[in-house]
Length: 246
Image (cartoon, rainbow, N blue to C red; front, top):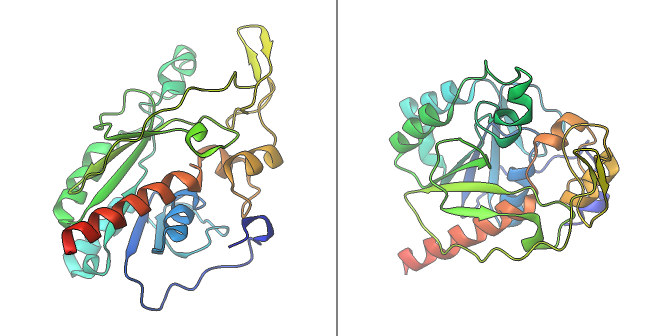
């Protein structure tokens, strides 16, 4: 698939038969979902906001309520894997650091624990994704952009439920993240895909650095994870699943 020629007006039809189907909770604009798609999954997303750029089947609503309903009705059995990226503002590095000192981030609910409780109730393999910080997840995997030759570092931690895979080596970073830090301007091979000003990435720079071209909404890009991460996870999951089935 040519992501560079992807149009946000296009959507994938995953209504046919697929070996694996993933439920993408707290899906935002589909960075995680696209990675699973590239790994061969059919993808269904769910988030509270309208996401017209989401390129797969989409349910707008509360992720926890939707998951609970799928469990109650038995429709959860349509899925092979569940991926969840609960809002991280209560525990991510940015909010508990500089922004917390400014009084920001104190009112955001921690949704990791109730999300995990419902994921355990599904009985399915699952993935919980969070950025670096104080979020209470088990860090079974840590992925960064340098592992995939991307123009961002964007470290993300992943807890794996009911399945496991080997943890990849973390390569040495090749330089600084471009921008102003504590009054000092630095250049480097990576861009800061969050916030505005101070040398942070423009929308086109974020799109190119993360491999996300189907949305040009700044807020969606700053929340997204690069599809390369979940493509790697989806491929690892399929390998682990085949080893069990053989």
